[in-house]
Image 1: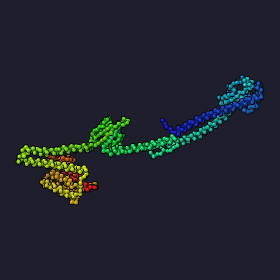
Image 2: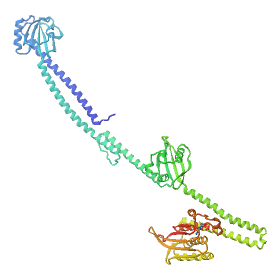
Image 3: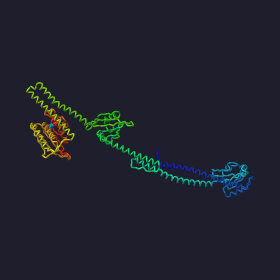
Image 4: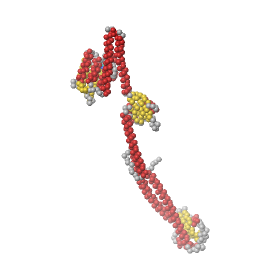
Length: 594
Ligand code: ADP
């Protein structure tokens, strides 16, 4: 429906009113004017007719000649025709200006008025000439039995023209008044509409989101009521807006700070909301994903199936999802159906990256299995030889000593494993709590202690132990732990090298990316480690050659202990090896702490 302004509504009403009044006034005035003009004409014609009959006694019939004479003197030059008629209306004689009566239509001339006839006065219109005639018939003598009739007629064209002129003037005047009334009405309507416009434009700007707009004060009661109601509504809206904004910010902050991903979808699987964690897990852009269908942004059929299930199920559902990528990740999904007032529905899905939890769980399981396995072998061996001794071998002077030596060796092995496990546990604890006590230490002193510890074993294999370290090199380290790490590495170098080789232990200070580091390396000329073993070398109980390691008294925990000591110092350990050439283990520790 087309909309028009209030101004035009009001002004159109005013225009209709003015036009109606104009038409009525003009019609009434012109009709009345014509009636008055006709009445005046008739009155004059009647006077002419009576004047012509003046002096003729009431009971007599005027003589034709005398009548004509008398008529001419009365009429002078007036455009009037006077006729003397018999009581039955038959023309006896006519006097008057030539042409005036001659121009009358034939039916008018032929029409014979009778005494008592209602139509003693009348007018007719000549269609051919366009002229109008007016006549008045006056009876002579008593009205019920006149002796003659006198009819006075005249052509009214001239007076009609005067009348038309007067009517035009009247119309002109009325039109001028109407124009003035319309102009005044327009101004009045504009002034009346002005405050409504002000209120309308202020509310429109408010609706446009300009909260600073003030509603105009106005003295029209209804408008003042609207303005105050709108002002109240605005305040309420502002309050609600603030509340919703606060709630939104809080919700955003909560969702944003959550480690778990949260994804809300509607019944048609369109994304209603997604937090940063979920977007990161699914590799999406938060802004881009919202309001788009899930199937369009996530190309994972399992997640889409789960979303459908979550929307349909009454109870919360749970499942694991594997996201393939450079590094496969396991995501635990928990979905709860949403039911809103409209019954539309949807679901909220919480995504939890359990890859690390699962890995740790696997590590724990492997660790328990490995420990059990490592302990089982020496215990079984001890048990077997003890039973053999009890069964009589103890009395055999040759075997009993040999068996007891084996038992002692297995017991040492058990002790070594348990000692390494305890050491590992202690280091992990202080690593996790960050409470490793550090002190400024001369690194040369640490290297001397390491050489002192390993020298006997090196001497057994004629292995040369070489160190290279500046005397004044100091670093904030935990001396016993650093010593243990280096002993583990040097011990391995000796164990896995052939006789007569050289093992070198270096310590230097290096600046890497603006940070000073203590770089400790243990290099041997042993058989080396194949590349496929290197990624897992620092895992607990990982061995390249289990039989050889065990035979050499290894626990499989040495490198794991080295790794945790390096981490507890805030550093790293790496390995480089070439089969047949040798192996280099490098520890990088921060030289000093803040
Ligand atoms: P282990 O007690 O068996 O020596 P480690 O954790 O110290 O346990 O070492 C793990 C494995 O790494 C060893 O079994 C050995 O196969 C390999 N390895 C460690 N150091 C060297 C080295 N310097 N040269 C060759 N192999 C080594």
